[in-house]
Length: 125
Image (cartoon, rainbow, N blue to C red; front, side, top):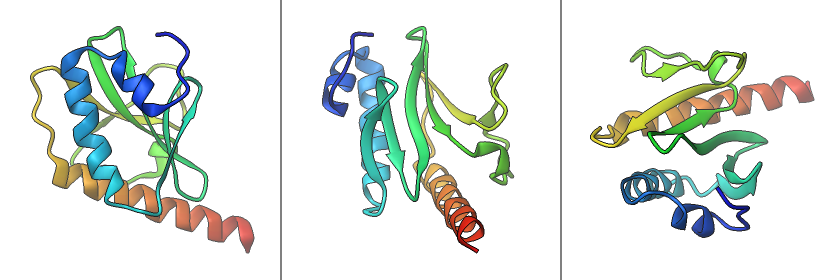
């Protein structure tokens, strides 16, 4: 992927099916006005009291919503996966023919925000 300077630039370089998925997830995240969107490491990051989420792709076959402290997020639905070598991050993987459960994803975003609140309070104590 070419260097990007905005989230819109990033999305424009994705295959069509990923663009649609990205827009769905981006719309969901935008319902939380306290989450701020930025570009880091050449991909979209979503910050809430620090780095919380990011969107990325792997070999144009799957898209992920990465939870930066995913290891600490309760995963009752067992939807999050771990890639080799990553100790803190967990991913919500999306493939071309998947239907995204946006309600469940929203619950996970809330869990991530609650975790960031907890980690911030603990750091400031």
